[in-house]
Image (cartoon, rainbow, N blue to C red; front, side, top):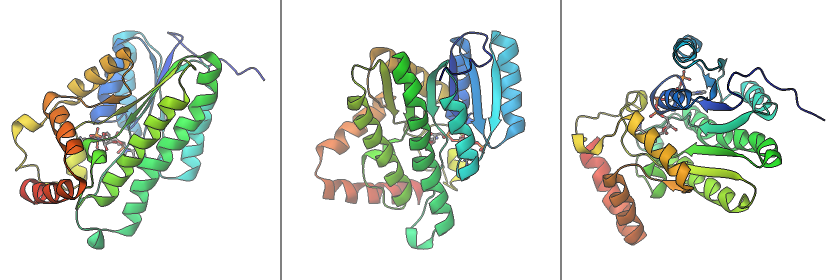
Length: 268
Ligand SMILES: NC(=O)c1ccc[n+]([C@@H]2O[C@H](COP(=O)([O-])OP(=O)(O)OC[C@H]3O[C@@H](n4cnc5c(N)ncnc54)[C@H](OP(=O)(O)O)[C@@H]3O)[C@@H](O)[C@H]2O)c1
């Protein structure tokens, strides 16, 4: 059955989850400049509307907001339907995510479950929803926002690191499955980025050196450039790339010990 054409100004849509702040907001700003119509998803409707209104006026694009709590099944289904029925969808950025910090034994199990629902379940369902139409049209890109934390075990960030390890494996696997379909996937693995993430995770950032930080705009520009080159894994920043290569090269038991000590030293 032919799909109904969505209202469009530019003829190509980018849908971004977690677009109300941080890296997601930076993706929205960058993709508006690149003249995509935007669909912005997050819980905070007011912030989404403010961003959408500003970008609509500044770049003469279409921009609509779909407020949704992606940990809730009904809201997630709503966004899945919006994705599956948008025949102009060219870019999906699965960016919404959060982390918890501390020994698992002390963390709230319901919040841990929400983290898994958002970082894993929502990301994989939205990816699945986008694929049929993208594959049919032989075009499209899915950027899944992971983290450096997904590349190694993370003592005191056990659930978060594991959710991001899922995103890495899922996205790399899809990359191979999708070869020849014209649909690209990228797993974006930022390190420390100045957003609301650390405050929301109750992370004291005082011990993190300045040189470790990147801005969300830098991260997004590197991701888009990397997508243009067809890279499947994007680790933004020289320091992050060095750390990723080092962790991959050392034996796993050593990595676990070093990371445990580093977490204690930097994050307390
Ligand atoms: N900042 C870092 O250092 C860093 C490093 C590596 C990876 N990352 C990853 O980058 C991604 C973006 O995080 P950020 O750093 O930009 O943090 P952020 O500023 O806290 O942004 C998180 C975004 O996710 C949305 N969100 C949170 N819970 C949601 C839910 N239940 N349903 C829908 N949307 C939800 C938030 O909006 P609402 O509150 O309005 O819903 C917000 O727009 C995350 O996946 C994170 O794991 C961040």
